[in-house]
Amino acid sequence: MKALVLAGGRGTRLRPITHTSAKQLVPVANKPVLFYGLESIRDAGITDVGIVVSDPREMLEPDRRSGQPLTVMVNSQAEIRAAVGDGAAFGLRVTYIEQSAPLGLAHAVKIAQPWIRDEPFVMYLGDNLIKNGITRFVREFERESPDAQILLAHVKTPSDFGVAELAGERVVRLEEKPKRPKSDLALVGVYLFDASIFEAVNAIRPSARGELEITDAIQHLISSGRNVRSHVIEGWWKDTGKLEDLLEANRIVLSDLASDVRGTVDAATQVEGAVRIDAGATVERSRLRGPLVIGAGAHVADAYVGQFTALGEGVRIVHAEIEHSIVLERSRLEHVPHRIESSLIGRDVVVTASDARPRAHRLMIGDSSRVELA
Image 1 (cartoon, rainbow, N blue to C red):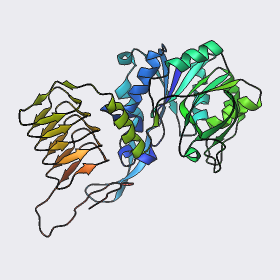
Image 2 (image 1 turned 180 degrees about the vertical axis):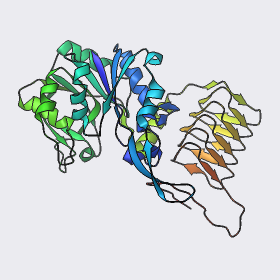
Image 3 (image 1 turned 30 degrees about the horizontal axis):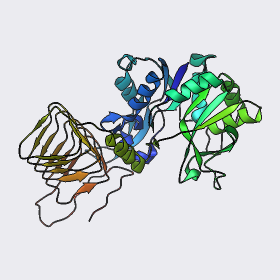
Image 4 (image 1 turned 90 degrees about the vertical axis):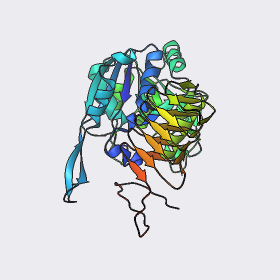
């Protein structure tokens, strides 16, 4: 069996972070989301992995000197290749499959056919997290040998997802983002297929949004009398494509954290709960209330770092308070007068107070940002 991992897409719901970074590499508990999926695939005994990546994309960004818009290339493909490499670090053999444009999940399957050939495969969306991995579902697929097996989860807002209607474990109908859902069972971003899926992806036509939908391909299998099974998963599943879900995934992963202090914590610092402090990090005169993780080379001084917070490598938190947040590499929060919470802060960001008069908020903010000022 092979695995097909989808790591393309624009990540519009996580902008501006994804203007300059692939959404699959945004970290949860200081580890890129994509890595969790690759580890789950490896743990299921699958070693041949194809990663679908998008071509570099053009975007308009302001020139720092003139302020005029310039066309720049955002190459998330290169970023993913650099992060994953040939897969050896994960115990995998990775092949990269280029998708010319985000034309749908079924399109990704279609272009991967020359690599997959006639082998069964698991398709894994690279921005999804599933508690306890996928080993159980892979073994079930191998044992039962259906034409397709989909994973489902009960959700509060089914109209945001592909939705399934069931007769027992048999899937009788799928619908993509229905206005009036027939159930609350959403498609989880893991699918298992045999070679019959290629007939289906070649038979369907683009949807109203111009994409080849995987729900339409699976519906084609159902309508053709193929055996499409389902499994309603237990535990949690998160599609990390939105800020609130990314922060919730961070919270859930950190909830299982074991304390591991390899950095330096001085005697004046109070530590509560589970904390992981990586080598080279220093904490002085602060309060840490775990679970939380502090990356290598970070510096925390005269600060409060609260529950469910992940500070990346080289982050500085000085005279500031933060909780339930993710801060990416090398960012600085210094002398901030109010607590920061439920936030995602990108790389090389500076958040600080100013003594300049008259007092005012002074901001430089990218496209699609959201700022709340109290």
